[in-house]
Image (cartoon, rainbow, N blue to C red; front, side):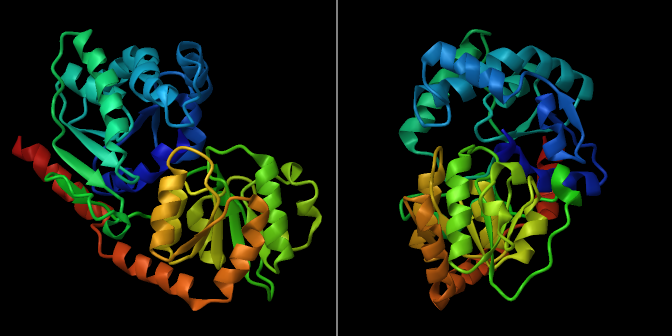
Length: 358
């Protein structure tokens, strides 16, 4: 899934800048969204994985439950393990960096005796949910008579100020400062000139495909007196896109969009939320699925977001943010806190040292 891979690209970029070879082993369909990163294809794409998950469980993986467990810890492993082992064997890496919900990576690392690092992007997952994922993953090792190898570090891009009072850091944690995404096919898109009106980014990220909800958000924000940059194709916004202040841009990297807006209207995906806070931008959040409700609650508790239930309320919420200093002040404080986290370059130095110590 794009939203799981894009937040890992700053670390890949830092590794390449330091002179290391760094590639992404994933489904071939991810290549345009990760460009210019090198992708070594392995395994089917999201649609095939979802189809198999539904066949096995009858539950869609977008909503926490049996389908999510089987998708990440079962289906992705079963359908991609052979091709992934082949690609990683050819690459012969010194280190695997594995996204938190990628239960294929630790299995491959164990099979090939390669040290591995867990890369966390989002908030700590609920303990019972994590336990179910690990129980399902354990079956993959048992089927191969393997004992899972331990990670050598946890790289964590989720800021301290979003953690709850009972959430604590792992002993092997290395913080990683979130960095605005520079990858993907949308890097060449031109951003329209600003008018005298405030401007909002309206995006549902890379996972939610509810065009009616997005159109409702765009219309509401436009009616509230904002110009709108929307990450959707013009054809998907037939009514709203006719308005002069609405610009339907398709997929565009956040690094290009965020410096051009005053606030963000989003579903609450981790990548968009952290990128917005990194840029010091307040948010209007309408959660849809997965970790969206968790992120929304955490950011709202910090005063940097307003959470809504009805997409049509996005305009009123955006206007409330612009008419008050409190949300913008909270977002600026969040950006300052994020700036103190380790840079990707520093994290690469630490990981290189850990590998050399082995």
